[in-house]
Image (cartoon, rainbow, N blue to C red; front, side):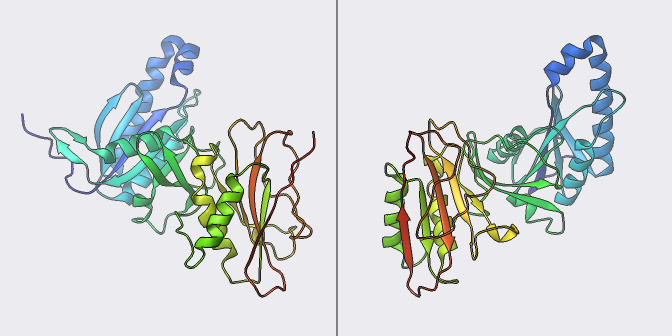
Length: 315
C-alpha cells in the first residue's frame, strides 16, 4: 500500500481538536448525538479543505490535522473553535504546534505529536492554544501570551491563545505568566541566594526589593520567580502594576504563588504597600498558611537594596 500523497513531509503544523464534554452531550442528546457528531465532522473537513490541510485521523470526536503553513492551521483552528451548528452548541478545544514529526505510513510519530495533543488537552471549550514554535511563524496574528506552562509528560511549553476571549486557567502542572524563562542577573548571585533562602524559609510572607529605577529590580524578581515554580503548585505570576491606574507610587511589578496546603489563592492584584520599608501581608490567608510575594519599589536610595521582611499573621 502506497503512502498518502496529501500528507506533507518535513516541518508541519499539527492541530488537535476535541469536543469538550462529549460524554455529557451524548447523555443529554441520546440518539441525536450521532447526527450532531456527523455534522461536526463534515464541517471540520470542509474547513480543513479550504485551508489546504490534511486529516491524519479521527478518534471518537477528536481530529488530528496537519498543515504545510502555520497561517493555514491558525485560520482553520479559529473557524473550528467558533462553530456552534444547529441548536446544539458544541465547544471544541484546539491545540496547535509546529514541529518535525516522522512520517510513518499514513500517520506521524514523534514528541512533537505528543506536544500538540497535550496542548489541546490543556485548553477549554472554544479556546485555541498555540505553541511558541507556531507563534514565531505567524507574528502578524493576534495571539495572547499566556506564559510558560508545564504540561504532563512534555515539560514546559510557552503557550499563546488565539484571540482575547476570557477562558479558565490553562490545565497545567503548575503555571506561570512569565514571558520566558529568565536566568539570574549578572553579578547578583549573592542577592539571589539571599532572596531564595528567605522565600523558601518559614514565616516569610512578602519580600520587597527597593532601589532607583533601572538597576534590575524587575529582572531579579522575575529570575527569582521563574526558579521557584516547583515550590508553588499554582505557579509563579508576574503582575505589572504600571498597567493599573491606582497603584503604589513608582511600583514596578510582582510575582507570587501559593504554597502546598494553602486554601487561599493570590488576589488579582498585589496588596498595596504604602511604604516599601514596611511591607505588609495581603488579606485572605488563614493563619498557618503562606503566600509568597515579591514587589519592587523605587526610592531615592542610590544603592541596590534587596530588603526582605516577614510578618506572620496572628490567629
